[in-house]
Length: 298
Ligand SMILES: [Fe+2]
Image 1 (cartoon, rainbow, N blue to C red):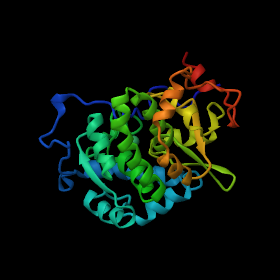
Image 2 (tube, helix red, strand yellow):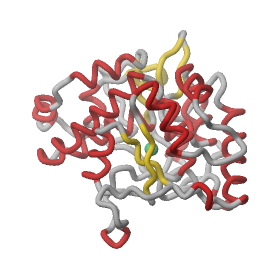
Image 3 (tube, protein in one colour):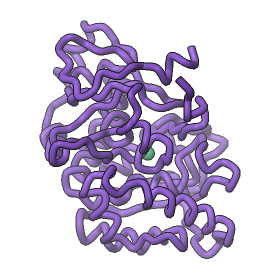
Image 4 (tube, protein in one colour):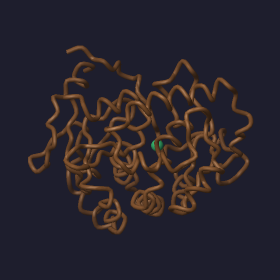
């Protein structure tokens, strides 16, 4: 099989990974001014290229909540959005706002923002020669990928709960388990919609190649979401996922936000960790993947 997607060319997002002290800005919460007036025509042009190509791909692939959120926000092809304008609309709908950060922020800063309904978004945009590859989440990933879903009350509450749970998980030494939940939902989640699978994860929605791969390719597994199962499952940080987990609907996130994770951490501590491509007998499968994509690079 010919691989359409050269490995290592996909979005490489390291949310929650600690940034170095040398990169720390003046503000303790790592926020900076977006500096909207300082974006160049070339930078707005990169946004436009990315926006237009995702806008063509996502109808019929993104969930209806993503499409609705996008339509209600002051976000369009011609220019990088102004975070203040986005925040005004978000605030009215779900009480969230978007704050600018220079890139990755330390875990505790990230969690504190989320717990207070502030979404830290990278202020910079990728270069024209790296449209499909970035090492840190930029404004296109963070704003185009995440912000439409923040208009949805279920995601809005879930991400806040994730922020509140983050510090606790760090203290318990189980941050890796919690991070997998975020990864397989907010970043790379699929959801059922009228008998079809649809995208709601920002890592997929902001990636041209993974938008197609996650739904259409024969290679990955598509598995009904199960919280403990996901907590045990490693993920691919530098390539397409080997497995995607599918929610019944977005309201399932509200149920997850109510759960006390502490007993779950204890229970899974005695269970084996799972590799990204593993399939278990008890998994409820939408698709049993061929695994061909990742096998080609072994
Ligand atoms: Fe993200």
